[in-house]
Picture (spheres, helix red, strand yellow):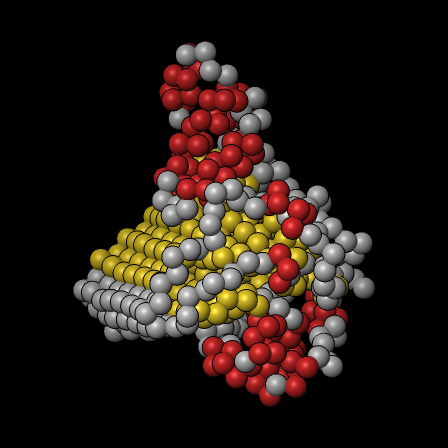
Length: 456
């Protein structure tokens, strides 16, 4: 198959792998969702460089690979096999997925408070499908993205969290998405549903990891619903193989006076893209997002925000930082829309980038669209190199160029890392960043030349 000339055929061939005999397909609402996805795939425009959302992203490499949907359950995986991927000193409720399938034997969420359900979508489909039907597709059913349409047609598992009104989880929920090397490239399609009802509070830590040079395409969709006065602290750490393709779309709906605090650390993958769409459904809600991405040779990191202020009196603050080295490429496309009814909105969008080599490239496009009068909004972006005076100062104290570069980059990243709610995650992320930057800066000329494009 020549997928570069027939990209629609690539999607339709994947769709042919959709399960046809599974018990869950017998559920009318899920069968309808999958039929809608199949219809959308035949009609939606395919991603190409002519579309604004894909202007800076080339997916030819993705379309040249034949992926097979993951179906095998890795029941032979033991607790000692995943020890090296677990965070130390983190007391949490743990949920483990391997190659897209839930592993109950390695997951630990006993003694949950009354009114809390943690598990997998597949479990929920078999135990209480009608409860899941209430939430499934509430926030993502309006999407016009072909990858999002593909997800419900082929998903067979995912994270399911439901916290009932007024319940507070004292321990974080830690989710490990582990992808193991297999003979053929896999298509992994989790569908996550996280619901916090009125006044509920929780912390969610998601970690995306892989072994060796695992070659796969993670095409995930998350639906997060926060009802009135609910609060969710959400950390996301993506550290996958240099052969992995990763696309995750997250849809967030916030009720009145709800709070969402999100930090996204993107440190791996060959091509990794995260899209976050936020809808304010009532007044006095707060949304704060932060991101840090490190991009090196042969990598593309792509971040898209679509923040929709359609109700009055809400606030959002978004700050993303990128460190690019070697021939790494980054994309930041952030948009804040303030509708004409959204008076007294407060919104800020900032993207800062540090380029360490002449071949590194960042395409950054912060956007602010305002249709209301009484608002406080701002947006901006910066693209810079290391400060020569700071570098000279460190070198004059006998510090090697590579270490001086590493220290300055760590200082640049600290503004994001020091906000992390879990100290174990902060320490782990610091160690990963130190390892990635250890050899950067050995060649003095790498610090001087960089390219960037920005659009206000």
